[in-house]
Length: 237
Image: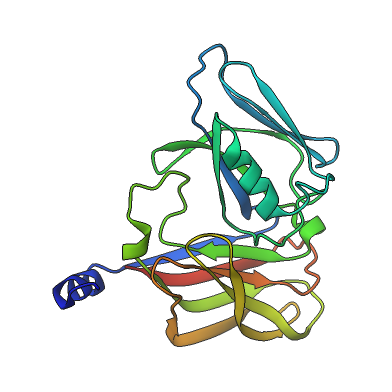
């Protein structure tokens, strides 16, 4: 059990964060090359109208994944498979394990980028296909974290969004995702409001268990809109 001194120190070291996604920017998977090959620069390509994901490592060994196949057609399955490969690791971010993977990601040759010191390939959601905005509230959005996951937590303070959507009950959702990455539970909902900037002030906040994440979704048949966004204000400690 954590000591009182530790918990107080963590509380006073808490940091405010804001995460924001717009059309085609939620990062469904963040992938990192961890292989030792140096024959070529690693590449990640989404092709065949977002039905095929090809990972080619530094030794020029290609792994082609058919996202329509039953073994990979959900994001959780796809993430697990990539993590089973010797040259690659990935993290599920702005998606749930139960979300579909086929025909819902931006079809492109993915450009590598350095994010918080890691060179990664971000697999982005095609929001016209997913018809929702999604953002993961987590202590660390990196693939390979050096931070002990169990000693940190997040507190969601505010949800703000604007979306062209089908208004109705339970269109805004918050899921708690266990630290093992396997269990996702719906813990909070609100009605979705069409084409109106809407803010949910969560007061003291929603805090999952130690080391757990929250996934926020505006899931109400969202249509791409130049003004559309989902923004999450939270604390990490």
